[in-house]
Image (tube, rainbow, N blue to C red):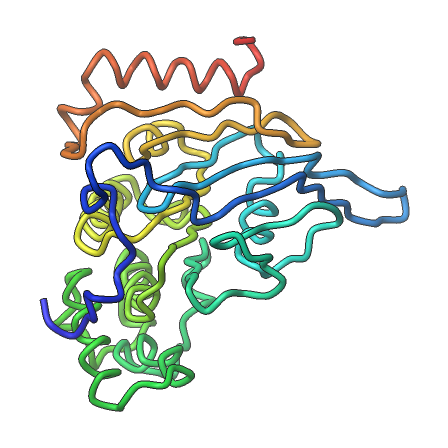
Length: 278
């Protein structure tokens, strides 16, 4: 695929020397978050510690209202934590880093309805010190990666929900981030489209070697997509457990989800969320 500067891709796990373990790209240290209200302070996150390995796919799950989105916003630099810190390659994150991209759940509000698909993807590249030609090449390559090469001149309101979310993903890819943070990105589409988008993001991760952190309420989705599943406790949230997912790199919606290992891990995650597994 043309248009992407592959020399700038983060080192994937396969590219590391034999016997080398990739270090964390993102680290969360003692992170707590409080919100003020008339009823008093509400503690949402309570001393969260978490490392995200470079090149990995980490899925964050937990009870409803546990603070998963709040944690992701802190990790992305969109929200300043009340206590603790987020580190990117060991350096504090105090604003949205240029090497991170975020895909939100509400794609309809993140896309500009008066702009074509191509110009929506081009939009964040205007702040990049690259030539106009490179911007166009990146945009077209990103749209090709998500299967939207034929939709460049259409507008968001002419597309289905699934196609709009593909545009949002393409916009993030065109920026060539080291890490892609995704907040319930497939929650607003139907089940069939969701499965298609899950496989799309697995393909994108494999092709570009990008680190992915995905927040989801869907346990099946977390186990299917992730290299590891991070389970948060109820509010105020802490990291209750981190579970490695040993299902191999090649995954299939039917055969992978029928495997005993998948079923066992799904059951384990559900039990942790419901507080039934110590």
